[in-house]
Length: 140
Picture (cartoon, rainbow, N blue to C red):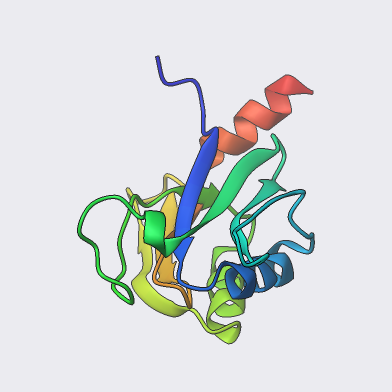
């Protein structure tokens, strides 16, 4: 049923600013853009990581549910990183705030998670995940 991360969508009041922020984080510009009636983006999409997963940034006017602007919300997707401490430090230096401190998930397993709230109110999870690395090694 669930075969892997396909797309994760984050919401922002200012999609253009969110796009610039994520472009700085990812080192790449969005490859897909949907303009609104005023010409400003209402949707931007990036390809991310080893499997080219999709990260979509959507105008907050289209946010489902009741989460208010400026409140962290949504699903937490954890992205594998090679240097968890370095990743959290970089995100914080870019204006994110720590949501969950680095937490080891099982002593000696190599699994650890952390999350931040980006400047647009989305929770962004990062983790070290030995399974992810084994999967990549086996695919080679």
